Length: 85
Image (tube, rainbow, N blue to C red):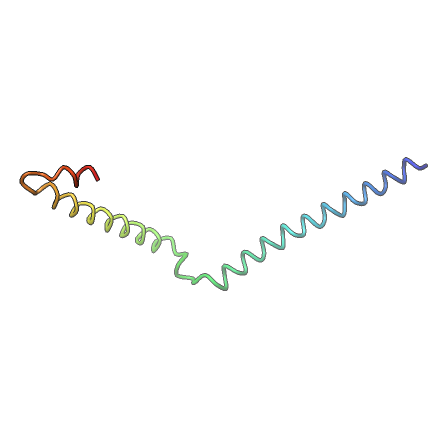
C-alpha cells in the first residue's frame, strides 16, 4: 500500500505542474495578443505599408551608397584610400 501512496502523490504533483504550466502558457499568449492590440497602432501591421516602408528604406540606402561611390570614382585620379575604407 505504501507504494501506491507514493505513486498517487507523484501523479498528483505531475498533474498539478502540467496544469499550471499549460495555464501560464495560455496566459502569456493571451497577454501578448492583448498587449499588441493596445500598444501597437493598427496601421503599423498593414502588410502593404510594411512592404512600401521596406522598399523605400532599401532605395534610400542604395541611392546614398551610389552617390558616395560615384563621387569617389569620378575623381581623377581615384583616391585609393577612400576606396579601401
